[in-house]
Image 1 (spheres, rainbow, N blue to C red):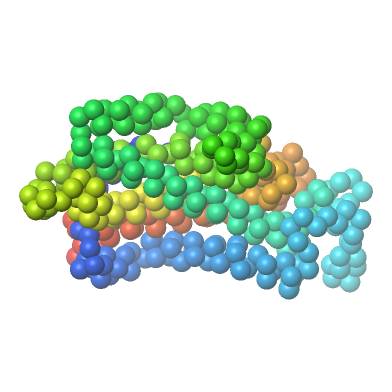
Image 2 (spheres, rainbow, N blue to C red; image 1 turned 90 degrees about the horizontal axis):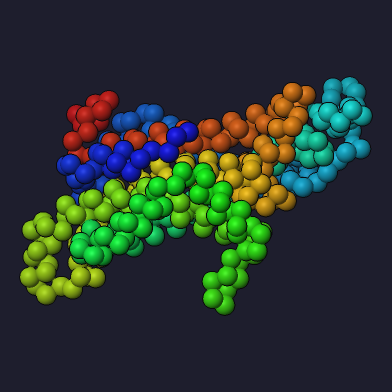
Length: 341
């Protein structure tokens, strides 16, 4: 899925602005509830989250009776009235079937693929959501002073964002990840191990900062000359107070929409990095790692690649459709699919 440009992300907000505040919450929820595709997508994402977090543990203990790393190369299971090997003598694992154990089949090491996808979903969602939160925080810290102060502050921050944005996302992410997975990351007295999930979280957050910061900066530029900002300054409010109390609440809606859209992109980037061996550590199950470990047998055991691929696709589509619906609901001028009627 192609990464959207910042102007595309912020297009609906830059010209007309977005209603914000508690008084518009009911109107936003009502518009969102009328958008069936967005509501179905939101419920699908909630289902995926519940399936991966409490559902993974319940499935592993109550149904599959094995964890995500439990190998079973020599084992057999009942299939109808006969017993079949989990991994045949030629190395082909058992395929999907209507049974509790190995519902989606097994991988080449005899591990339950359904269990691994649920636990892998935990990792992918944690990396995707945590990196999106960090990315959004960094973007706000850069966009607010850049748009409000202007001048040299804006010039320095904008050129930094342009520098990051000038690199292809995946190329920059691979380069940073490949560097950090060797020796980890040292932040003063703090050392982050190369096997920590903080490495892919930090890398993915950094490469996507411009995609959130630029549209927010554009909105801050429009807001800083509004009457309520000038009134706050006339009453003696300082720059920090104006940015945090006056401007920030008016860009929350934009930020929320950008956050939902960037989570989907971050999950895709995590899968790509893990597939290339520079993302989540190999021993930690994630959707990208599962695809990487199964693609060599895509002809004889395609379910090892197709199943996690479908999980990634459903999650990304659900977040993108819900994000689009949220944008339309927050936009007071939206008439798409009759939301403004």
